[in-house]
Length: 533
Image 1 (cartoon, helix red, strand yellow):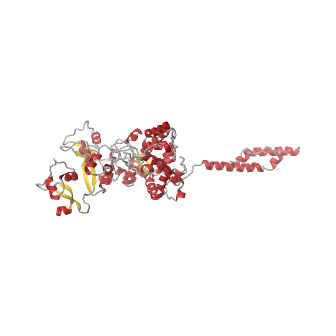
Image 2 (image 1 turned 45 degrees about the vertical axis):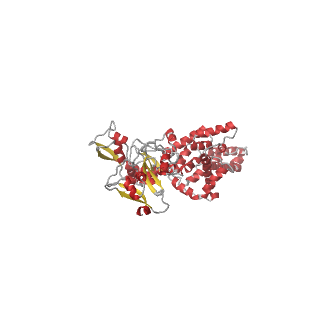
Image 3 (image 1 turned 120 degrees about the vertical axis):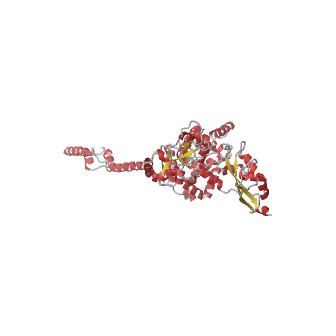
């Protein structure tokens, strides 16, 4: 009996101690069994309880480790670990695309370099929406991560969004700004569209991806045609355009390649799993060269992060934000806050001359008639000679804004594509096809030389650059500049240099009714052997 009382007293004392366990011992206290004699419990802890407690602690720790977020150094590995769209086995179309990537390992090196500023942001947006990480590979298929890409189908930007889709998903497109190239706006618009397509096709991502390329209407018609014929309606069974049939396998091939990088011996340059840029509100229009100075970065770097802006400044009516490198944010925000809105642009006081119009002045200063009109509070476009207008002007020469739309176009037009470069002014009724027929060149080439798509509308008065090969089969053809003299005429000059009047007109974008002026310069492409004969 005494032993029993002592045992009970010991047990009560132990229970009092167990009511306030340390965090480390909490599991032991909870799991103390009551199946042994009381004196034995008091005298010796249960070995099985301790073992179970340790096991439970280890299990809890493992669970915490499993649930802990994975920390990545490389965004490519972050994507690779979360790829979820099933890959078909032994698929010839997928294998063909995979073979191309494996035969061109340098391609992914170039893509990774171009994707470096943008990929982290894209992955963040996709994860936030809980979408498949395969979508982060879509800009590779669409544009190889080139933010200024423009395709034959009038699609622009990394996500290759056509004008109609851009408008449908809220992207502004005007003289100053094209949201289809805006990294922030276009990524969100593209993901909005993809989410819509996925829902439209009842969660089938392959159908949604195919529709992103060729439109939901076309994919839906292909599905219905197969249903009517009693055929399977999965993506691989649909009768779709050749481009779309290759489009989805190309994306899946990229997925397979990332998943098996070691097996394929691919060394894709890593991209830091850290934000490269941050969206900063400017609250007003700002000269891009000035913004680059405030951020202490090169103008070209700023424009690559903000490719949506077509000109030398942000759009007067917005959006009023810029993507600024994370490393430069602190300096930029301090400098921007100390600068008034009126000092973020430069202005010229222009005296209207006889014959001037708002459009003429706007073209001269690389702005728009509407902005001049609003800035000067004009009720109409009518202006009078002698009056003064306030006109926005760039802080640097236009050539400094190398990635503005006009400078990109000039660089493309000046890149030699043939032996003879000609200028052509579009006339009413012209089309790429009719101009190409006249100059005996491909109509798609004319569109490409002028950063346009073959389906773009040609407006009368627009200047086009056309490159032609020389008619001569040897190197005797030379390009010369001839200065018109008193008494010269088109026929006399043509006869002198043994060329046709029509060629003179084409080379210099002249009409037959044009009167030559002494001192005027003409470009001629002559055969030296014939002229000297």
